[in-house]
Length: 405
Image (tube, rainbow, N blue to C red; front, top):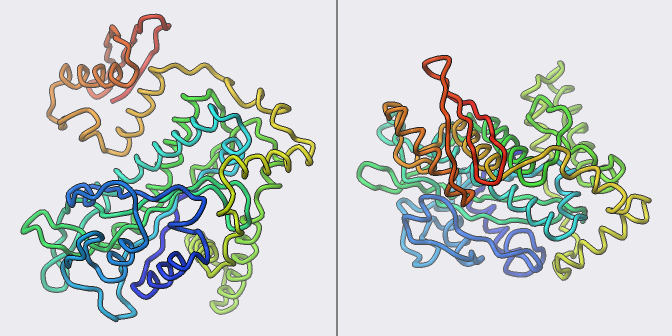
């Protein structure tokens, strides 16, 4: 799923205070890996590497450059209604986190890389489709920007101490307009408009990545694009889902209150909004997992799984390699996600809708070869003007059929 919430300047001051004081390890915390700057806007400013609490406080609390403290357009000021940024979160289905937490290191690394790739694809999509600003009287003119100035954090646990691999992306409400290069605010309406699409893209990319990397299979996809990995025991999913139970209980209470106030049942969209509100309500501080290394956390989780009668060796073989996956499938899966998201720019070079077919085919083949390190021969066929198929013959691997438009 992809969560989305606004960050107020005084709200960020709370986060900065908590982080600086070491009260909880939610963003720049002990035990979690360091955050890093991401987004095209960060690239334009030359921001890279680790994020610290001082830089976050400058950016989200004051609207200034995280390093130099130079002003990035109009400061946020003391207006409590001001929006300093947007907090995005990307969280995989619980079975993915359970597999990451309990599997051997080489498998867990593939799960993490698949999650990271899916988050990156979603962020590219958001910058292309929700990276706009507005200018002019009353914000009547929408304009493209240089992309997000944001910080990404990958965390290991839920607040209840269960395994929950997830990423937070804090997007500053500061974007560079392409005309005049002024620092303006994000057109938040577009961000909310494509929130569900970005979440669906993240889940589709995650499924494609993990299927290609580990050969996992998935149960039926729900209405929100989510699916659990087949073979991960439901008993473990329930055992490690204490935070979800808490959120669902809070959501049920909020939904009941809202329905009583309205005198009617909530719509699907209203119920989804209530669930998200429950997830972002003030929560108890994270358990003191910060002192534990990832290896220590995983050892504790494995012991818990064994105590529940579900040690990893009992079920792992039923999860992996349920279907054969090759290097070329991984490359093509990545291409498919980028193609569906409309973010081929940069992925296959400078392609446009007017690019000749032969040039586009050559670009795809070159990308597959770059991703896999193997050269391929391709036989192309087409049954319709907008659809083409390829049979790729990689050295040392069987042919792989591919169809796209």
